[in-house]
Length: 243
Length: 243
Image 1 (cartoon, rainbow over the protein chains, first blue to last red):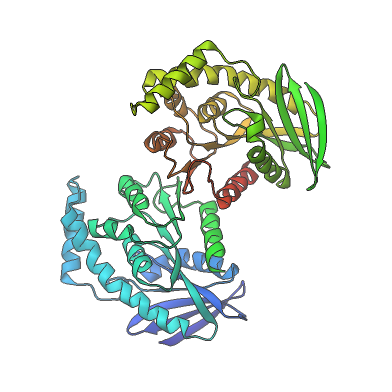
Image 2 (cartoon, rainbow over the protein chains, first blue to last red):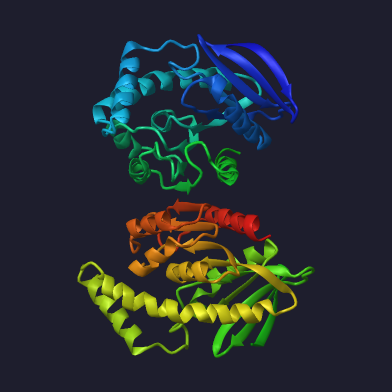
């Protein structure tokens, strides 16, 4: 892992771009840290550049609460290569949506499962390197979509102590089954009036989680209109579980 | 309205019992108020004495946030008379539950609608008197079950500016229809694993509300196990809308 740039933002946040393996990422830290701070991983659907304003806002909130925050580019996002199979699945999805057909379980599996298989080890590698930095220590939180990536990380990665999951993407049957074995505290955000979201699938996933502490926060405002107070509540969740 | 007792609680809260008409109630106020404070009405399923610990905890939180809080006894609760029709509906409900039968729409209507018809004018009368006190001014929030009472108040009483509604009781079809005409900000609490609660009915009601700002917070912990952080989030909602 090597750092490629460092910017001091106005509010005592240091933003550093890095490359881990061949994956670009960004780390946000408090300007001064003593003792080391817990880490929140910021998941997203891909495209660090377009996602920057929203990721930076989430990161600055995390830093204000005493955390480090980091993200890496999604497989196929930004300049990262995409596979022919992923292109094919995305084309099939587009065709189904344009034709008003239901998106088949087969398309969902081909779209999401390879992404989960590739993303999770990448997050784990990033975590290895980030936790080796002197100013960062566990526990680690995962925040965001892709929700299936969050489910797999929550189930398999013992360093993840709590997760804020954003409902809104297609959920393979296998991930729904995995959810039953997730036991960490969860805070699930659902945009109730998100027309691109399968609300029932999100409710079924929430119901499936095996965690004794899980909360579902459903709000209005469409796909990208998560209200500010929803961010406040999610921030409070991480403070309760990671601080 | 006349006050029958006054107690100074430890945390700068003054608790005063009152009678309005022939209905007993309790008012909690900050020990010092200047200027006048907004009011939160605490709804409950009936039985002020048994409900006291939970009501007082909610009231003290409201007072800490700069509000007055008040409750009145529910029709048929405590020493208040109950009607033969209400007794009959409750007996029919018990029989249906014991037999494992679905509770019919007719039973739900007979159980809930007369309670709504009687409760709402009682809350309005209490509101008239409480808002006439020098230390209390609008807006008014409604917090609690019976959720159908909350829906009717939210739809018909313009002094109610925001409501925290507790899902968990039976909802008549007519109330579901009324919900579409509710437009005030709403914060709905649902205990996801409440075995006595019709979860789908609660989700349908949440979906029906016409409010552009509505949030559903679903948590674990069973019927009476609303977690402390859920109370925090609900308190934050009232601070945003009534302060």
